[in-house]
Length: 227
Length: 277
Image (cartoon, rainbow over all chains, first blue to last red; front, side, top):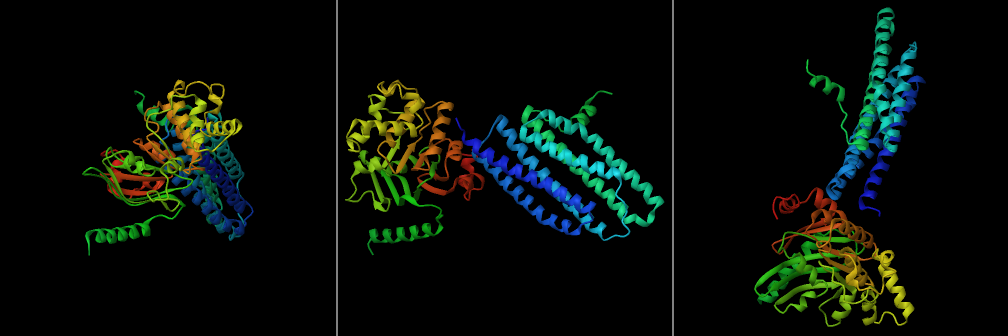
């Protein structure tokens, strides 16, 4: 039997898949603008982000209507809540891509070009992979893949620290490139934040699949453990 | 000016103002304009104007005694059977006054079908329950024509697969939910334009209720449907338009998603959020 709710949730899912695809694409474009020092690509990012914002508003409205009109329960309720939370994370990814694009514009105007460190390339690939896999985990409702994404977050934090430490050393030894070196530190910070949003998405997948809230689980467990 | 003329002028002014505010999103199949209903001295429905749109489900909600069922029964003149009941104002079906001389009440009830709170199949077979209406209205003559109407009506009511091998069994032998779908099939069989439903799920368990709700949602593309319900979530789930009644007056009507997310009137908000009612 087809349920009334099935068409409602399917509509929300499709909007979220579209939003996820746009978020991945905008991040990719902003990073290409950095690596290729292409200000024209960076200029396109702001327009692309507007589409993500439109989808965010549409999902907000759809979630409000789904809750008010369908009163979902159990896994239906968890999925509606997850869709709302994931949309918020994807909207933030769009904002971070705009920040990356701003850095791309600034860096493309700077000469001589300071070479991008290999650690930044590693960080950017890991972050993009994390975002893609978190969205795959949602579309397949795959808690194992979601856990794998969550497990990668500490490694991504460490990669960010490595970029920052490298640039601090460079700032001392080659202070003439300070502007680009600070921008590289900011890039690392933005990428690490994207990975945090991917982790949030993975946590939402576990909420949907297993009805378990794993947010801040390790931190909260440490805080409640007897000394 | 005579009192009756004054009342007429006032009524026209009110209906013009209401028309100006009315959303223009669909075609009204039925239209109630300035309707008052009295049971003896009791003024049960007070100057209500409401449209029932084609291809939509309109839910009538409100606390007990608010006049919603009374108004619903006006749409196919079921209140004519209550001696103390008096209906004033205009109700039209496709622009035609349902109280006019041109309107045959038997034809009206075929065009505006009704499904009641408790399933009420006739004491006949499943087949004859559905074939009864087409027979008295002369909609079919041969056995094959009746067979086709019975099958199509039961299929549209989502019941064919469950009863196709039990057509000769009494309608009352079916489960409560099946009986209610049989009553819907019976209403459909005479090819109505409008279906009125008066709390059609209140005697059913949650599974049978969900099945009927799915059916109502599916049928909206073919008929104009008006449903009275005490179950607010049911109104929210199945309807596209909601009208909230209180103490015999229509407090607010509009798209269901607006009524349930941002009602204009405090009384509507208090009722749907469970603060009173």
